[in-house]
View (cartoon, rainbow, N blue to C red):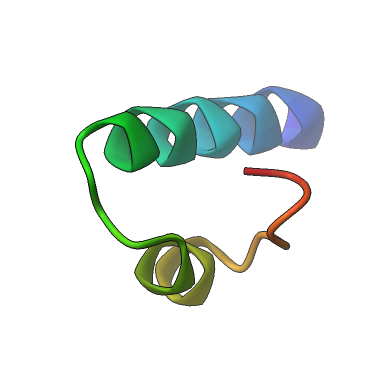
Length: 37
């Protein structure tokens, strides 16, 4: 279950990045590292 949630968050982070949201803001709100995004 946890793994699925993590993948979902990464997917959202990628979408935000494509939408032009700065990586730093995405990292702050999702607790992902820059490499994971």
